[in-house]
Amino acid sequence: MLGSLGLLLLAVLPGTATAWSSTGHMIIAQIAYDELSPPARAEADRLILRLAAADPPTADFVPASVWMDGERQLGFRGHDRWHYINLPINADGLRAVKPAAEDNVVAAIRSMERTLQNPEAGDFQRALALRYLLHMVGDVHQPVHCVARFTLELPEGDRGANDFQIFGDEQSTAGATNLHAYWDRTLGIFPWVEADGSWAEEIPRFAAVTLKQVPRSLEPVAIEDPEVWAREGFHLAKEFVYRGIESGGTPSEEYRRRAEPVIYRQLALGGWRLAVLLESALLDGKASPSLATDSPAGSGAR
Image (cartoon, rainbow, N blue to C red):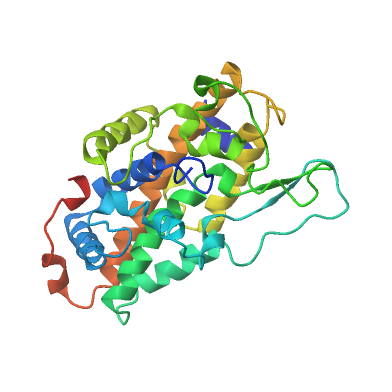
């Protein structure tokens, strides 16, 4: 797997480290939205509007990709494990390490996909599933959401590099104090954009920049199994996240140079794969053909 990935390559609110930053999630959602067919896009818009007033209020497809983190910030903890899967790296050859919990982002994506594509599910249930999928498909394409590194120093694991400390100035660390947050913040490639702020001016441009960096290949996009996505992230973490940096160190220019293509690739691939998943599930789950005409088209880009 590493060979093919090599050929392809040539957090959340400030102060936390739980997922791609709002910028990263919205870039993925924008790419997906632009890929959807008009009927699928209309159905997505309709379902997003169904929960537009749910805290935190969000009426558009693209910022709805951050809603799951906002819900958590408001105190809901029922889906804490749905943001990641801790596939173990046994870096120091420990006798035993914890396997990934069964309640994880891969299982949750499968469950929410079944809900969204179920024509017997109500609008509320499908609208909720859509918002979770917008976020979780992004999360599983973030390499540090697919791994936990076990060492003599951290025999219980580093929680997806949350406990891997880094130091440096704002430019060298993108304002992060751990390796997880550094990757969540796209290594500083893209600036922070709030989901309730000027996203409509910035995110389409960032999505276009991302797509210019990544050649479209139908082979990896066609992979529809979230477990395979997680395994890809696991191998990317081993090859690019943890290599070339020591705990307590500062990301070097060489480290960033090697890692940048991974960021662009995962943002683009996450968007393309999200579109493939939603295109099928949104249309399969419609209760009747008339549902696609109930909402204004284009709300994901406004």
